Length: 194
Length: 201
Image 1 (cartoon, rainbow over the protein chains, first blue to last red):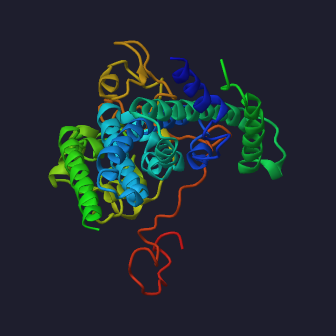
Image 2 (cartoon, helix red, strand yellow; image 1 turned 180 degrees about the vertical axis):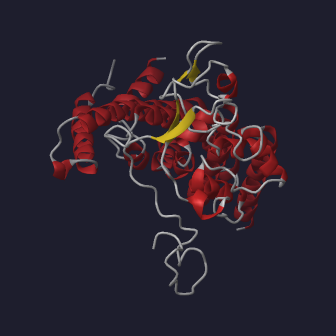
């Protein structure tokens, strides 16, 4: 039980995928102007990450390894992720047209989110079992969502504050992200021994 | 080698099947054309297009019975939007050169000396902008009036006039772009225009 809890703490805080591993920066910067968009994007990515993590583990264990074609891992995982994203888009379109309109072009961009592929590959590298893979994916998604929401809230405040003209927009956002990243370094060592 | 091909082919087929099935299960009905056209119309319900309201006009357009250029309150922009939606040619506003000049927003005003309190204009107003009762004074609430001119006809003493709203700080807007139907480049006719009456050149 403790290992699972530590795994979650590790993926959400200590080895946060965006601020520590620097994966998934594109949607992080791209959809964090407004809080609602960021929340929607975070939810969609959570769904995709968990599902992709589980299915890529299954594909790896039951198709790639038995057939001895591990060199196909990257392309097979990309195929899995693209299919999962497509599936998610269809589900979102049907269940919540409002959310579909808000997220719009961002959903296919999850396919190219390197955090998703990164999670899938890291699962295999670290040699996790099925449940651990799913938990790893879910934790990574939670960490991603947490940081997205925090950053979106910060950006909304930045938009309303007195930023020097040279820094307005992307520069101040990147500097803020950097400072957040340094702050997250403070979590280092939190997952060692409990 | 063969196993690699087999593995990828199997994965592709499997996910193709899953996605195909979910495309059927999660199918979303696209909104009917009438709804989409109706959303573009200004909802003044003024009947200047000779249909009983914006919805009947939208239905007529969808059935192909009506031209898309019959709506003066919508103006050229609405015509262009409907043309883009239905992928047809954008026609200039019906009514010739006169209708194409936008006089600006106008409201109705009742001459209170002449009004007899018959309530016929109140019944005609689609947005309920006229205040009054039988044998009491009628007056137009300026902020509610959309300028549709439907009240002018029923009045038996002809006491209603249309007045253009003077632009002040609160109502000023950027002028709309030129009617590009008559623009020498965008109308697809490449002759040099020397006739000065053709649009704002």
